Length: 324
Image (cartoon, rainbow, N blue to C red; front, side, top):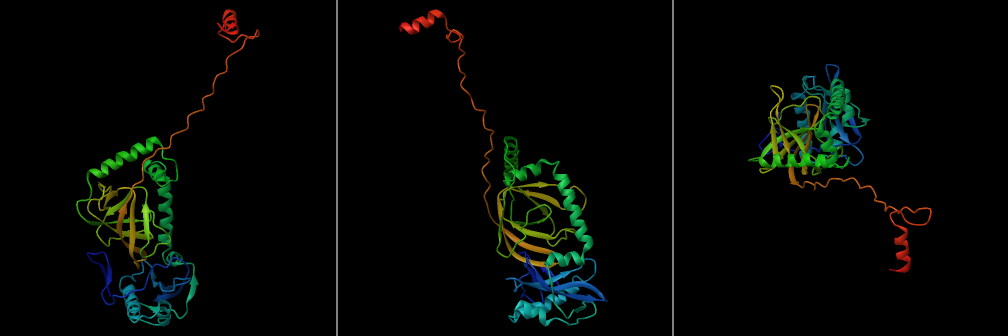
């Protein structure tokens, strides 16, 4: 069984259209899939209210994908078509052996902290790369004004007049060349904010600008947990930036205030893949925080020892007292 993206961004399983929800965010019950005495994947179902979630987490460098994942997802899809509950479907596959290339499911389910914990066990080098990438990103963004803009637009720091001025310039530049037609772009959890509790139909608003990639649909992004393939309608404010290195995808910076909705969530090649579409855009008003002026104190007049206010003469005091 193979999987592919069609024009509507649906990752369609050819031999089994039905599928279980993959979006388990909490603990899972999982059984290993072994091939040649090595664990190459885990078959899991959700817990704690997510019992209808089921799927696979696989090792990236084991050669298990796509044949192995396709085989076991095919069996899960067939069970889903028969309306078998996810947990029951996973239990029915325990101890089952497939062809030599796809391995055998272990005979026991064990509780794990979640899909990310399983992925870290299967792909320790990937986990280490992710830690390094996040650290490099933190170190780099400290030197880039874009990080300051993001923090201000997300309400994490005050929006100063200088930052508001830069944002206004970006707004103008993006509005000059909106997307001429509908297109599909990608962004990852390294360059964009993706909620941990993401589920189908979940809506997410990005108050800042959204960094996306003009990549071929289905292109891999090594070293990241989640890839979102986002359908962008024509007329969306955008700014294209050429790729910095040969072979890298170009960058499309989208206007701030975009709200997107997740359509489908599934696992492929050890990553969480999300297909989504933009549902609206509401950029916030650029109201810069102005420092409060220092309070102005009324100056009291100075009084001379003889009781006359400074600046007045004896004659003036006499006129005041006489009323003339």
